[in-house]
Length: 365
Image (cartoon, rainbow, N blue to C red; front, side, top):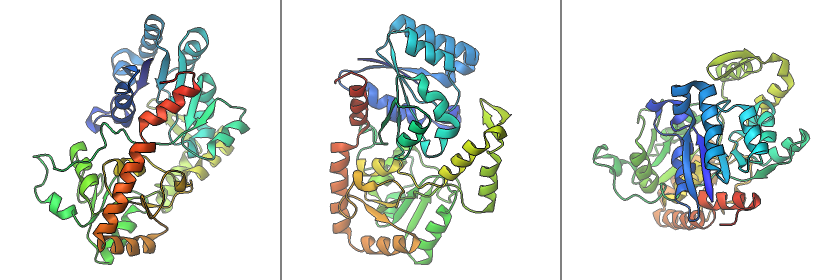
């Protein structure tokens, strides 16, 4: 099966941010699948060199010349042109697929306009399939985030350039890796107030950003890896920033008025507050790490058994209590981490997710 993957090579198209999730997780998983011949089409690089029109013309040309079985897309915004996707879907032998992210809020303002253009699209949000149906869109399959087992795997040693004391600091500590926003600071502060060992890494935290290699080592070796399901909307400032999106949005570097879509935007704003299952839920166990995650609005029980494969907390007080308990019970912690690792490799790799999607498209690997 020949797959052409179209996505951003760099995070949000910015080389200074490093490689994108879609490149390191999706494309890397695809190119390592048995029976798949995958090629990457870097939309951001081609757009920078040729402009949007030129990049789209090049994509269409490559599809017509190379005739891949599938064009696999990961759209962040309007990087591709609707007429190009439509032509590939309807006038070539290549099937088209798009993996939508953030459908818990983007269906009414983004995904509903793009989904009909593809042969098949996917959503990770439990409510969005019905949401799509209300718009008359039925070419949607429910899937979920996962882990690229070629990248996320147990790591015993930190890279040479890492802080030499880092391994000792995290060994029996709670850690968090991710950007500081919303109520995340309050959660970390709650652990500090309870005199529990906690370290946070990423933009806005004292620990700073980690390299990919350092992050994998932290996932593998931390006493507890925290994941927060709450959204960025916390406080008056964040709410007003989100309200502004009811009237003005930014697409392809340009601002445009969208107040005429007020009710769809209002639905999107409500969706922004949903607590979602995130990729981190699968990536940490794939590294053999012990995961403690905040409760999500989607049912985590579909993927892991709480208390046996991961641990779920309800609120700050519950998190503090469970962190204290599991930091004091390393054998129980290790048993849960081992079970979570085994479950992830068995059921939750991207290779398995993609095989299910390809089967729906008529390709059995």
